Image (cartoon, rainbow, N blue to C red; front, side):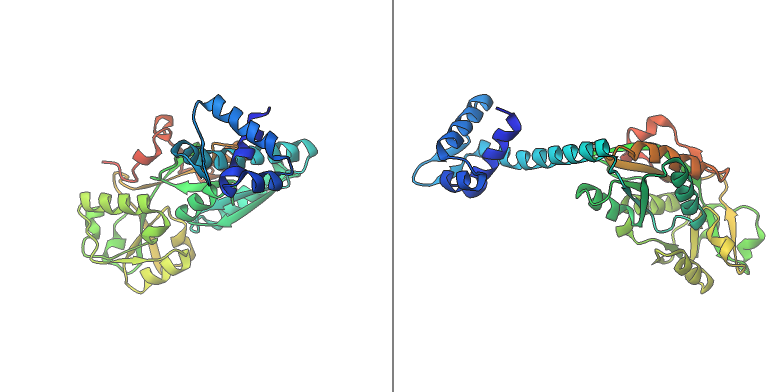
Length: 316
């Protein structure tokens, strides 16, 4: 018998803890169900149930139940995806992108995707890295454009892109007279940045790099939306780190590069290793092309992609 069917029989008995109710739920007679469970125990070399006055799971059975649910869910997703692809029904690819991604970059991604894949709709959703990881685990999105450093266990990564960051500050600030700034020049200022919950790894790495280079913000103010970032900078709550696009929206702020390039933003598309959407890898390559089109962003070293948790925003 198909091993997966035996697992489905096992899950039914494990959840009902009663062979009669499990057989009724499965729509089969009880003797064949009991036989299949015994065969599965023989296959695994382990007793899965204690059969007394009541049916209970053994320790081996408890482990198998947890693993079986995940395995069966993955198999169901595989068969669904394969069937849809065969019938030409893959109508949407759900992708999370960070809230601060520039509008022209979003437009470039959508335009390029529509041109290359006219029969497939790209559903971009504005989500933080933390939100994307949760939705990827629940299979509520198909891929996510993550900000590093990040833990990507169970996910496959596409090529990563590095973009150097500079400082957004008030135009009338004495520091604006400089063509280039060091992180230490920002001493005495506050810092405007996304909340830690949005991307914990990025948040911690950013502050660590600031401290290592002589900038200990006198306060940290949180903002997710680029317009809110601008408002806080304009009102004197602090400086912000950006690749330069935020400052283009407001003449009362300026953007200055950081000498030595101590800060950069690393992005890469990630998707589930098990039963991924067939178009995930293709959209990863497309996004890399669009992100590199600014002439500043570069492809990250391939050896770092294999160890994403060790990728730091700061470079000494």
